[in-house]
Image 1 (cartoon, one colour):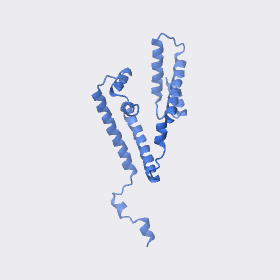
Image 2 (cartoon, helix red, strand yellow; image 1 turned 180 degrees about the horizontal axis):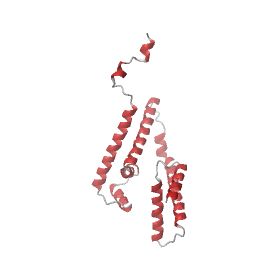
Image 3 (tube, helix red, strand yellow; image 1 turned 90 degrees about the horizontal axis):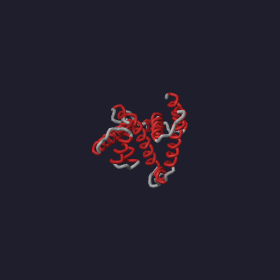
Image 4 (cartoon, helix red, strand yellow; image 1 turned 60 degrees about the horizontal axis):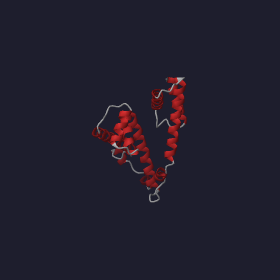
Length: 191
């Protein structure tokens, strides 16, 4: 399985999908397709080659889906700068979006299931019952809608904390006495 995983990782890197998907996710999806094929009574003559080829097909499908979503008119409209904003405001929005994406990546590293839950609820707009059914189909323990809501609430809170921590790290520290006592460069010029 190691050679398959490394081949999957190389392909994910090649298609610039390595930040969105893990090699294990792709391998798992290919495995599930093989399991479904075997349950349907079909025969897989060379499981290793079939699994590798199917994993590549999964990557190609995800790349097509990613490309299609990137050309969605709503996405393009959201990415265009708002003419009512000045350049400074636009730059602040871009920087905050970068920090938000970084916070999402950190949350995904900490708790991938919670990140998936947030994605399904906010981006895919799934209902709590749809999410619950999907989790059961994926082999997770059954969870009530209240438990899912609570978990999503905790994930949002954690995402917010990560985001604001990164914002605070970006803002220069003016509260230190040395920063306040130091004369500005403009006052030095006037002397």
